[in-house]
Length: 184
Image 1 (cartoon, rainbow, N blue to C red):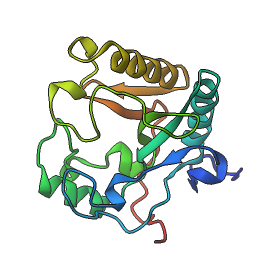
Image 2 (image 1 turned 90 degrees about the horizontal axis):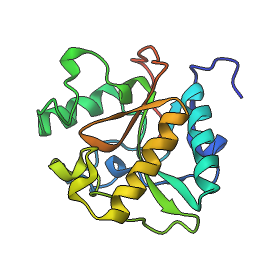
Image 3 (image 1 turned 180 degrees about the horizontal axis):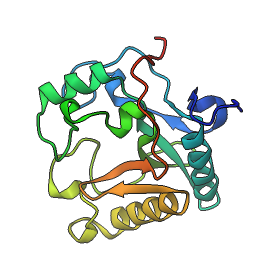
């Protein structure tokens, strides 16, 4: 491990069995455009340590985490804001660094141990009521999976966001890192 718990690390180097499907490295996101040129998930080491604990708890129950988004540069955040300027779903860069640009926030879902999709309340970047943390309007299976994810993530030191069941921020906030940019 790095000596500095706030150092940026490649998540897969510390959690090799985590699934990674960075949606903003592809056109499979709400913008329909590639937002950043790297396809590895990057976070602060302290956050990765907590994520590793969550992964181990979930594996004991037959699941793994899949990362949809992790660190996001300020430039990428600006692009997302310009595409969808709604503060309920995209942090306005004018208000300072988001958790993603700090490297302490991650968007995750569950997959099986074999990497198969698990039924969840909605897809990624769903800007409807299906995405919120009220699971009364989704199937029982989707609600149970989302509540399991929420319970495990919170027990490992993360807080969820009530409008996005997939969005979790480390309770120990990192300082902004304006110069960090992962290599493509």
